[in-house]
Length: 374
Image (cartoon, rainbow, N blue to C red):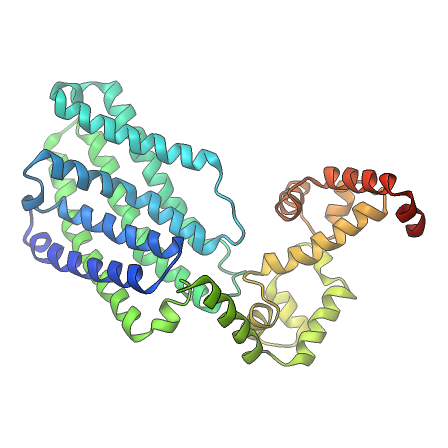
């Protein structure tokens, strides 16, 4: 163990513990709990690199399980932060559960029967596949931080995306990448594994300490900006959000002009419309338009804003016309039918075809209403 790891690991652990306590004490909700849990997972990883905590199997086992959770917890944090109105698919939970249990079972089996570690099937199922899955989750975490950056309307969250990718996603991905390569080389050259694993560990330890120290400074000095993405209380968050909309309302004339462009000129029907294009039509700076759509109209990202108009128009056409679904989708601005179907189902919890059928059945069941519509 290098001197840097021995020196900075306790410092990093203390900073992470402080950050976790701040998150657990000051904030409520799933996101705050996940952030506190991630701090705990990083603490476990750092402890695994200190001889004091790896002298007996029970301690090693518990720390190992917590450290193994870190890429999954970080992915969940990124998903909750950056994916608006998203739904985590069951296959994600199944993958996380399988990989976590496989690593757990593998470590227990190796403790009971050490020679099993030399079995290739055991290595692939309990180490290699879970390690690849963890690496995949960590890489996708950075993708989630990057994807949607240009359409994000929440100022603090847009800034935080870059910080999140560089500070959290990069270090976890690097740790897992080294671990993956080390696991493969374990069967080829043990000396190479030692050289590969030990040197980056010292760098990662210092990096985690620096990042956790920085985040603690942010939490204390810039509390409102740095922590605004984590609501202290759902009811209070809703009230403060409504207050912010009123107090930070942009010029009403500009808001009306934007509504005219969308409702009367139907600018949303332009495929590939960007916030930059819209800002040019309004003759205003892009950051001001982001603030207008977010604060005065309540949308968190630009796609959410566009989808509201597009889906509303599409649902009307599905009720009033017999035009093909594909024609409606392209006509309201979607680039493909699959994208339209997903957005529509997210809104109404049914496909466009099912929506049209349900409306037809409703009208047939109410002749008086159908007659009045005619």
